[in-house]
Image (cartoon, rainbow, N blue to C red; front, side, top):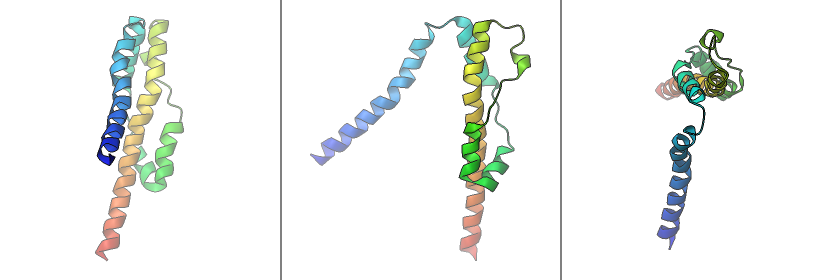
Length: 124
């Protein structure tokens, strides 16, 4: 009985994770093509800043949390002369993607500093 309950919970979690991933591509075909192109370009253009490793190292979890709170406006030169749908799609996708990439750098900085600290702690 316990094995059945565990496998049932695992299957339910798997379904809950896969449904949004499968449904996103289905939803995009109802959006204007410029909007979808703007989202794709924003995902490609959003680069993380390596300096967030320092924030993650010095501030720890607070540095990672700050990555998600900071405003990340898209560069205006990427939006010049584009349609309204493109600008809306680009703007909607740019901030979360940029913040996630900055947070990845902050996680790396925090993990590196914690790892070095633990290594030095155990070496002594």
